[in-house]
Amino acid sequence: MDKVIICRCEEVDLEEIKETISKYQCSAREIKLRTRAGMGYCGGRTCRPALNAIVAEISGEKLRHEIPLKIQPPIRPVSLGKIGG
Amino acid sequence: MNKHRILEHPVLGKLANQKEMTFTFDGKKYIGYEGDTIASALLANGIRKLRVHEETGTPRGIYCNIGHCFECRVTVDGKPGVRACLTEINRNMVIESGKQHSTPFKPTDNEVDLPRTYSEFENIYKEEKEG
Image (cartoon, rainbow over all chains, first blue to last red; front, side):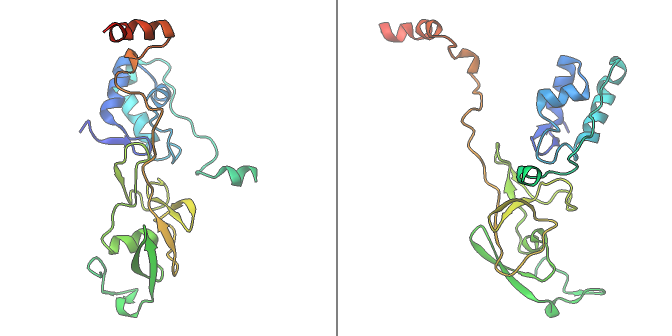
């Protein structure tokens, strides 16, 4: 079960996320920065709910200021050429 | 080749009446039908691996199949990052799978052992020099 991949873009499995949470007692945002889960090609649109749920379940009550992952544009991956011309 | 297809569909009709199309995937020719997506045409040909993870090289294929996850991205006629699950095949379309990239700056297991200054380097390799 721990080998199940949570973030496919950056290939981060549940075990790595669990370990990072227990080692650093961190929020979903910090998990993202430490493991790169949710920072891949799809923009975290696939694993964001899973990441938030995992953090809430494992460390939920321990954390006072849990920061969930925010959503911001662009809503889908676009090439630099499309943005800048 | 039609092993993975529905031969007679109540809405879409008979497979035999569909228009065939030839396309290329990684240099090999395959046959799909008009209206097929790249992913469905390849799946019907028994190909599930559309790319490998850029860093680790582990296989990737259809995941969400609704254009959400970009797991099935391939290079189509030289254009990278095209979603195979949403893109319809065209006649003579040239499709390339995603390949593994080199990782020259990836940290090694013994990274901490590597010297960071010249004096550290000299200390570590002193024995070799003397010997």
